[in-house]
Image (cartoon, rainbow, N blue to C red; front, side, top):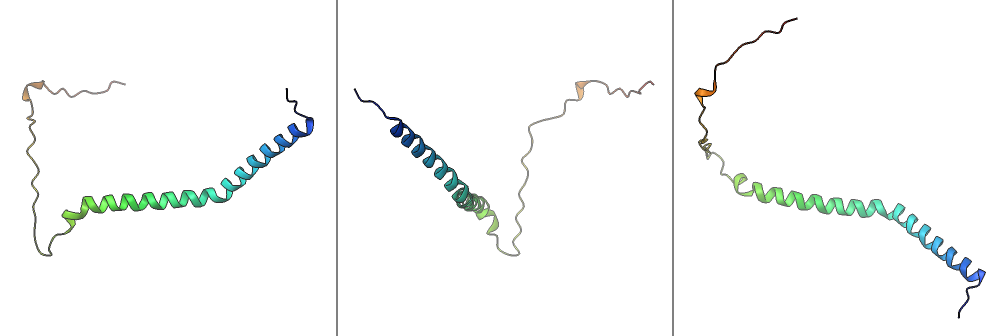
Length: 91
């Protein structure tokens, strides 16, 4: 059966702490750079999607007039709703 000496346990704990602090420092230094990279990449992707949506509509010839008609709504007002009653607040 293997036994761990005190120095081996202490060495393991020190290595774990060293790795933890090295990771923490690297995130502190390189985290903003990585975040900026991903935000820039996402911004380009959103801009590309926006241009694709606006593409056909924005390619109009100068002087050409296009009228887009609003579709007729299927709703009709129901006049049999009831009578309108004006009320006054009582102090």
